[in-house]
Amino acid sequence: MSSPLAGKVIVLGVTGSIAAYKAADLVSQLRKLDAEVHPVLTAGGAKFITPLTLQTLARQPVAGNLWDEGQGWQPGHVELADKADLLLVAPATADVVAQFAHGLAPDFLGSLHLVARCPLLMAPAMNGKMWLHPATQANVAALQERGVEFIGPEEGMLACGYEGIGRMWPVEGIIERVVSILTPV
Image (cartoon, rainbow, N blue to C red; front, side, top):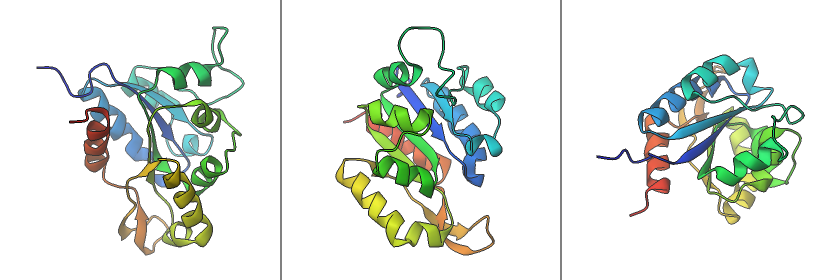
């Protein structure tokens, strides 16, 4: 029996949140379902998880530097966007949500986002006050109007010591949503 994600290409954007450590589990779980996972690590994300961890689990190189894009003639962010079946950003910080909402492309992930024509699923992870701020909510609404899907955040204890909304959705739930997006009934 074929795995539900066999042959699917998922680009996983990992941004600068403490929840970035969960990206290792996401990659591992997606690989167990036979997905081809290409990690894209922002500079902030690299403060929380190493490229080597993601590269080892994904069995793919980790993209991150827009100016060091590879060997071929086509820009790496364009090439990766063209073959992606899904762009998953987990964790998605307030900064990346704002960048995507306003079409900014300061790095590999932002540039890839503007080129990608596949579905986009974002799993926010941030302080609850940041999530509830009117600017963040306006950015989320703008992205949703463009067809971007958000999963979470959930309520619980946050890294900042507060309890409330802002935790990244559980990995199992993100995996379930990825499978449902990529294997429509």
